[in-house]
Length: 334
Ligand code: TYM
Image (cartoon, rainbow, N blue to C red):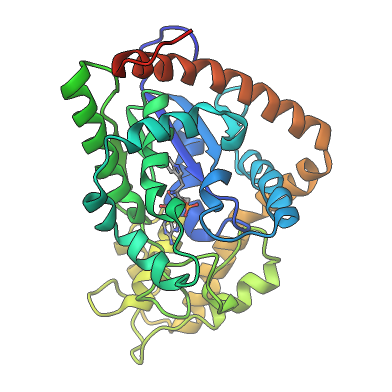
């Protein structure tokens, strides 16, 4: 991250609000691992973002460390990528404040995630929930990211980030790189196994709706066996077959098979066989992650070393952008 290399810069983050779901993995984290071979990557645990919903302090602390270990267990290599915990790097909140002074009330009011979350937490519609996209813009712009690999639900936040960066650059010159969202064609929106019209989410009250990437094999198999489909029998990807489309997408992301290949393989077989095959492909994909996590989460010293090193480098890299922005707006930088 430090030397002036030409590789494109990739940045993304994930909240530590629970064990990552299969949706998080397919939509985001799986791609992050692949990208670190080719690009200059930075990945972080977005713990500050989690505070927008009331958290139990001791649980949040444990989840942040577990989420960090999970990132490594999913193949994010601290020797190749910059990996850190957001609250360890104070530039994020500071640039967030600066950018909030260049953000309009109206544009934040239009954010669908704000509308959804304020409906879900009507008793706690705090200012942080409202300005959440500004902090996210700061996360991205601080590292001059070229590309941000995310699931489809983050697209609007990325558009907002581009708007705010463009606005700032139009006033002060070239301060921020304008980032591109990287949203894969398949798997950018994995749906609930119980309600295929709803996004798979770790906060789903129905535990059968989501697969957590640390679920035991028998739990995973049971969730797939119970997955909601339709009253037909054909395994084909077609409009209106939301449950089957979702299972086919998951299977395709796990095995690399195309939809046509899957349709051919399951011709004449029923949904029962197909659900078992999807479940088994997920179990096999997640097995090494669970094993890595078991090992890593015990090694607190190693984790501490990694996040400390990550925070130091992230602080150095991001301070350059922050100082540039501060000077531009007229703050007296010491
Ligand atoms: P979070 O923690 O909700 O989700 C992390 C990533 O997982 C993706 N994702 C999904 N992809 C496919 N199908 C699903 N069902 C699914 N559910 C979640 C999300 O799109 C995301 O990419 N605001 C962010 C965290 C963040 C961030 C950032 C991301 C903070 N600062 C800067 C990128 C850049 C969030 O809440 O993600």
